[in-house]
Image (cartoon, rainbow over all chains, first blue to last red; front, side):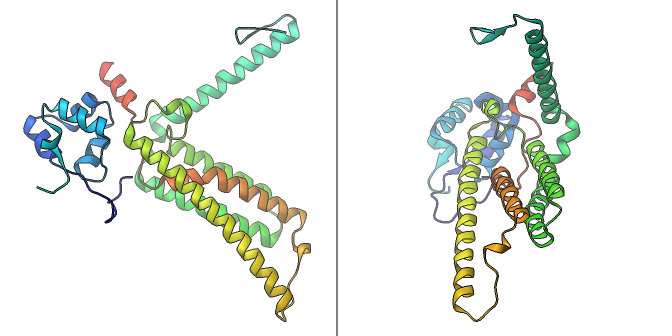
Length: 76
Length: 199
């Protein structure tokens, strides 16, 4: 954990940092909204950790977006 | 002594004293553990550079102590004390991760990291045991087939057997902390952040 994903692992890309910044929300505020530690938000934003489906849905709800607007299998 | 819903009711003076002593002991232990876990004085143990130092030190103590005690056939007490010191340092460094009462504090990232540490620890212990058995088989094969003067079971003195036992206990106790990795734990748990904001 907290490491770079291996080449053979399926990566989940995200636009979380851009969307969060645009919404004017800090990592801590988002972390509080989805009940995780703020460092976990940082790991997700840096693609060092792929969140569970539940957490992805919670993040999408907190940012008022659809999951696929934030997370994708292809890098945009 | 009777049991009532899991709590003891003292019937004699001795039982009352015993119960009071036990409660005092539990309270003392709990307050020491709480101090180690929550005092900001120990935050220095929880960052990444500290974890690198503590993990390196644990590795050196565990294997260096084994080699030293095996060769000198002494210093076993120092080995045990050194192992206890690094174990306490590791426990301070990784506060909540391996504690049952800390599980609700962890989020899914931290829980996954903990589970990965357990898997790695299991694999590491298995590899070390396999390496030890293979090494011993290779040693006995060379001793029996090559024209080399090597010792047998007489090498395994009482002192060395005790050293191996201490090493095995140290290995199992430390492995989860070593497998946890060097990335530091957050200085503050989610609960602590919330408490700080509400205060």
